[in-house]
Image (cartoon, rainbow, N blue to C red; front, side):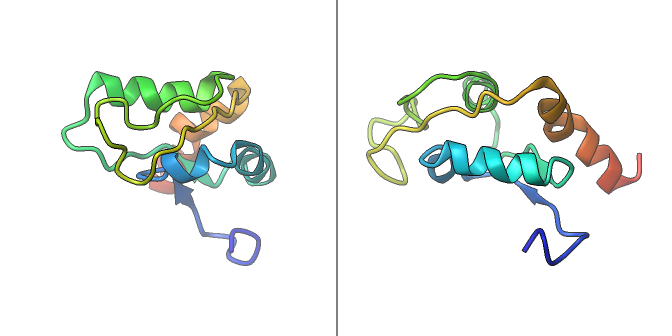
Length: 105
């Protein structure tokens, strides 16, 4: 869809449980469309633990960690996720640059 719709942009809100199961595939998508992926979360109110989890997923090279450490039973399944270990330029795009472009800032 990103290849077909040039104005289409995605975010990662509510998808760590799925994206972290195939981190290399998601990283390839980000590499292919570095200016079309946004940071997002559907957690409300957001906690520092949730931010730390997102940062761990995007920035570290950790493997097999829980995506819902505050829950005794994970909400989407009893699996672990692995991180993306994105380079700085892709992190800047996800955290800031893409949102600025989309919002016209």
